[in-house]
Amino acid sequence: MPASTNIAPRPSYPAQFLTVTGRALAQLVRSPSHSRRAEAARKLARHSLWLSAAGAALVIALMLAFDLTEIQLMPARGTPGLWPIRILTDFGKDEYVLSALAVALVVVALVAAGLYGTRRALLLGLGTRLQFLFLSVAFSVLIAEILKYLIGRGRPFVGGKADPFNFIPFEGSGAYASLPSGHAVTAFALAFAVSALWPRLRVFMFTYAIVILLTRLVLLAHHPSDVVAGALVGMVGAMAVRYWFAARRLGFAIRADGSILAIPGPVGGRLKRVARGASAP
Image 1 (tube, rainbow, N blue to C red):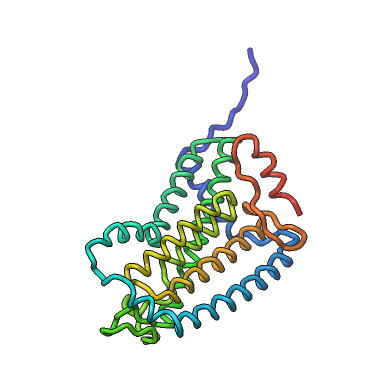
Image 2 (cartoon, rainbow, N blue to C red; image 1 turned 90 degrees about the vertical axis):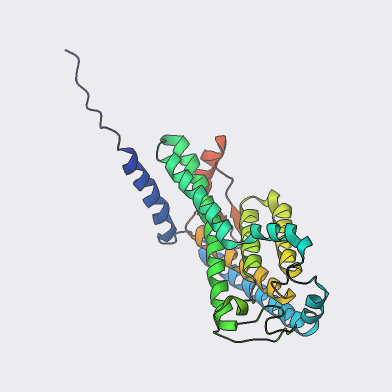
């Protein structure tokens, strides 16, 4: 009689889905392990400090010297010919961007749950990068919402006149949520995050971010200083999330000087190189 073999049944699809989802979430909160994370943290602090100082100086200069002039030059709010701009600006709306990324993450998890071996590993590598994009935008938007509430800057012409110094801190309404611009935060956080993963897309992504920034000015939704502040918050927020991922060896490697570089994406024959890069000291 042939020897009997005991082959363990594969877990059910729901169990696989829960496993994939649980591991994807667990990797985000595991303890940092990269030996060069201290160097990366110092570099992040220096860059964030210099960027914030330069950005704050520019925001103040725009408030004092340009905001009033610029908003008086823009077409009146509600001008019929601006409908293409109103459509275009929605591509920087945080709800839409985060929803699209969330749907992509769910799709990756659903498909990965039905795969095994190399194919699952490849797809989960993509999932890690989508997590980075989602959290870069979400974290930056969260910081922006706190700042909007604390600062309480009125949007252009709120109160009946063009007043760039119309502030009611802690007011909490949309009319007094001008600084920083949420669309600029979203667009620049996404542009930085995508460029960090795929540098060849840098020009395209920052062009997209600048276009979104300009639509907010044309629609009189924000002052110039608002969108500059939003760009600053978006980029610094995405930089912080990139450090979080690199410190946990997720999608990024850290050089000896503290520079953070993306590990080549998990496509085809690159999987082995991704694994080697992720395990580097």
